[in-house]
Amino acid sequence: MRFYDELTSLKEQIGFDERFVPLRKYDNIVLSGMGGSAIAGMLFSDLFSSVPVTVVNGYDVPDFINENSLFIAISHSGNTEETLSALENATSRGAQIFIITTGGKMASMQGEKIIVPKGLQPRSSIGYLLMPLLRTFGLVDEDIQANTVEAIDRVLGMTDEIRPLAESIVENEKIPVVYGIPPSQTVAYRWKTQFNENSKIMAHSSTLPEMNHNEIAALPYSFLKDRFEFLVAGIPVGKYLSRVRISEKIAGVKFHLMPEISGEPVPSMFASIMYGDMLSYFVAEARKVDPREVSAIESLKAELAKTD
Ligand code: PA5
Image (cartoon, rainbow, N blue to C red; front, top):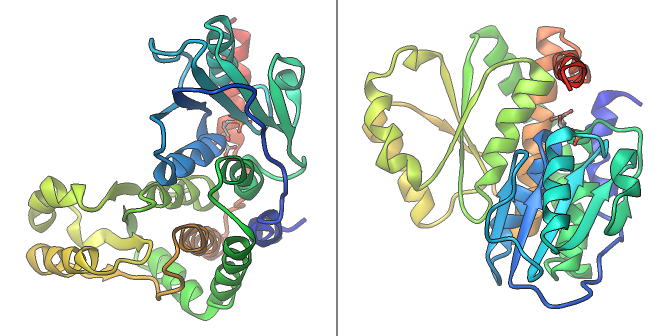
């Protein structure tokens, strides 16, 4: 499958109809994952706050985890050592365990499992990894699902807008600086990581309103200010749009805004993900780099495994 088709398969992934059934009540949720798998947990935590939600990206789990916790391990390969370690720790503390994976070592570990289709890169499987969470915790119904597919479709029709932006980033050797806005601030981080892995460029992400309390002070004076491409990952309205406009004025820069696609949190989040995915793909195309390969990550994991 072409990598572009992998990314745009997000539209079909929205139909992935798997969900967990919690066996008992829980006081808090802890999600664990790394890289492309972690993003699913982070995006979920932007949207769900009925109980405390914590995302861990590492070997350890928080001290508060116990039998009243729901622990969700997400690993596309099922073999990522940090996530395996966190899963073992949470199991030994008696937490209720859910696992989302394609297989690997996790497939035989203790816990309720959702097995997602194999064959895509972890970061291209974001719909498969995230939809079970949104369904389990009641964040999507049939209408939201249909609106999400429609919103993604609209972005897929925006090639004429997204490709020239990508080409201008490459031509001017720009460094993307991406800002996320509530309710899904994590989307900005997703864009950053897609620029890293697909386009093979460094990028920076931050969020609104937080950047108004620190980065805004640096922007007018920063080194390489003219080399930054300021992007907003999401659709700012009301107060957030005012913040964008005032930030532009104070910093003397222009932020690229996406067109308004949907006012609903889930469709808007997925539309913004698709926009960033396409942008990172077109940057890779303009740079003539392979957006699929992540040999640096694979080599690191292989070398680390030899040190055990
Ligand atoms: O995008 C990638 O390939 C990585 O960020 C992986 O997702 C990360 O290394 C974790 O691997 P896995 O998703 O298999 O747990």
